[in-house]
Length: 478
Image (cartoon, rainbow, N blue to C red; front, side):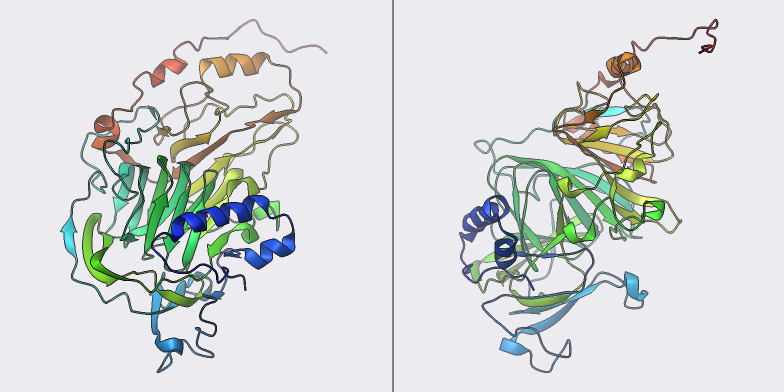
């Protein structure tokens, strides 16, 4: 069992120390032995984990989940991520052993939800290709905005009450959450940082998530986000389903995202009273509610189960690609999927386009022109996307709705139909991603109007495409 070193003690300012140590661990430790001894994470996807804060050895009960008296006088609390009667492979739950149970709080009261919404009829439907310039991060000198206050819903579909649908948000923030935590009762958050690292404290422990990493906070898990400066990123929210690794089919046993590269936090607790009040923010049926309690919610001394938060570094993705001619379908770039009840059809896929080799002969190598029965939202973490080197910028995004045509811009097409085909590195220094969904998504009023980042000149990138049709063309007699 890999656990966080005992020197991490509870204090109000341990975030900076933890960030510093995590950075040192990930960047400077050279030997595998050192990494194992000091790694604050447990590795594997969907595993049955168990973890104790090293300050309280033996915190987990032996041989049962709910003893009459728990070790150290702790409370046993189960967090269920699935129905009790789900088949064993789909059954998700964890047992938390905590200083006080989460039920000890004042009643929830409605709270302003800012630009967070699940109302999809704010504006009329618009099937046009859409692109957004980088979303503006508020200046800390003007206003203090934390992660929750900085959430803005861009588009989505479905219903939180029936637990079927998705939402795509962006976050722009500049300050840490202080004595505030967030709990999403509607679904899972897949968080993609683009600028600024996030130190995320959860009931299960802490995670440092940097750009080019992702993390998933599953429904019902309380978490708080510390930032070290201006921060921006993307959030894919899925109602009523959880993310899974995609099936590999003919690829075989290995490839794409390997289970061992996913990391979940090891147990860490703080026994801290908050006399001024600790605020728990609950997202429920699309609305926000707050309640007050006089203690930190991150008081879990030990836990075991398979329902956890986790993170993944995108550089660990094992790319599969064409080595002869033509394109393989972009589904080969799927990191995580949230399945629907229809076989092979996803509520949402998280897909990346990492650096790789392009070697296909006789082939137009960039993404081809396309109309899709799925909705495609793209974001850019860093670099220049191969099909649109200009205009599509890190921190921005694009949406190509169901059956709306899209593809390479004019410059990309002209260049790649005349270039000499040689083995080449594609997307070097770049990381683009896509949230793809079978839902037909509506864009919010904030996305179309309020944010003032919609690039109204987007369609011009295809205006200069010209006809190359030659009715006199004949096959070569070689």
